[in-house]
Length: 132
Image 1 (cartoon, rainbow, N blue to C red):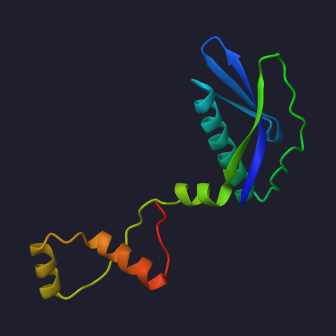
Image 2 (cartoon, rainbow, N blue to C red):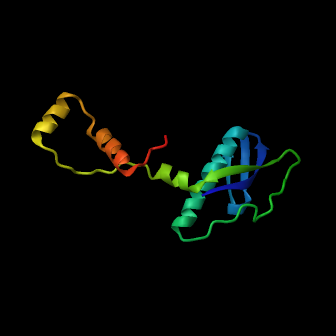
């Protein structure tokens, strides 16, 4: 699910401090771009944590964002909770499968990557892509 949440970016002595009002959390970054990336990551992580805990996600703009200092930046950060979950859940799992001995010999002679072949075959069979 895609959304856009308001953030407030404040300059500090050693970088940028980010307030995320809707989630009542903060993060930081080395520069403005990094602060926005860190805010996106923090929002997405909190969002999937809320989902896992059965809590409703805050609606964007529920909490009014306010500047504390004149040079603060109020902006939006887009997030995609579904894509973030997929990225986090893209870990390898071990599967045990059996093939004929002669096929194993031929595949090993040809330096076949069994994991890659299985992944490619499953994606083709299921009509899905990795989108990376």
